Length: 125
Image (tube, rainbow, N blue to C red):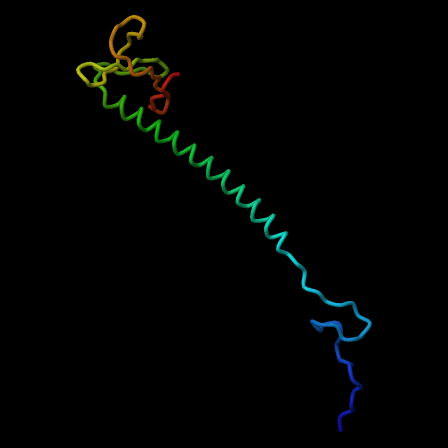
């Protein structure tokens, strides 16, 4: 026969998810809504900052691709030298690359470019 236990007595009180005697502190659910709100604001700020950085890098990449495409499709009859600066002009509504600087010539000027070691045209400011 099994021995009867008194009321409010449990075998393993330390592993119970609730209090097992009247003198134990009350278990209350913590209000974590304020913590969640702060965490969401912080994460959203980090994500927006990263998104803005990526957007800026993307815009720079699109800009570089545009200028490289324009220069490589321009007309020129010489092999450009890495590190030299060349000038892009319009002639008959078509771009052409020249060694002549804009202050020496009266053609519609597009911009100045330097060829880097990766054969990428870098627009000069």
